[in-house]
Length: 234
Image 1 (spheres, rainbow, N blue to C red):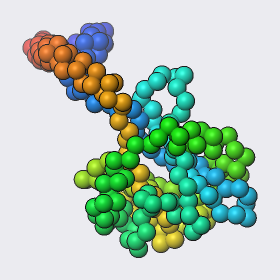
Image 2 (cartoon, rainbow, N blue to C red):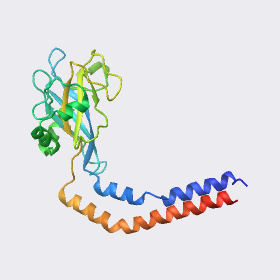
Image 3 (cartoon, rainbow, N blue to C red):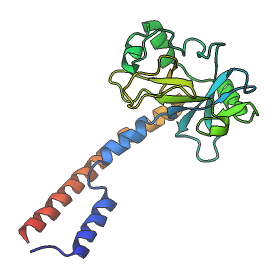
Image 4 (spheres, helix red, strand yellow):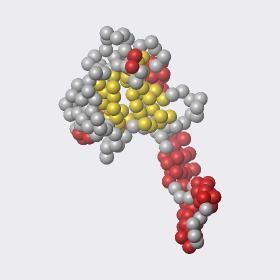
């Protein structure tokens, strides 16, 4: 005998309310959540159309401070040929994203992964976007570069690989494809940790709450099993 639509809707809503399973996973995702992550190129500082860009602005997704907190922006100066300053530039000839990471010298890899952006650098980023020289990515009238993340790569640790190139250069199709030969590559930390007190507090709270989350997971799994067993037996 088939269950009515109202019965199925009730089961779906009650399962959603209980969370069913995954409470422990979500708890520890919250406990380990960094202060900011998921960086992308927000735009460029270019004094005039006939002059090269002098800096790029990186935007991170922020997880602390609430809506009133200022955006997490970082200004990275560029050299005359468009490459980022050390250690954030890959200066080799490789253009396959995975190979770029593999060929990074160990010391450079460590310096990038352990970078903690200072309050001054972040203030520079916020000031840069207020400048008339700032070009926002994606707005054609002011577009200067195209860029693309390397995408998911196994074992890349806390380093994001981003290729960027002037408008008009043919872009690759897939996220795993090589960057154009004429591109530059910037390497930046993927995330920024919370301050030590906040990090310790979250880990402690997650540890204390884990038994409760485990009970919720068990109850949700049991509810799901009983509910769907009832459906098959009806």
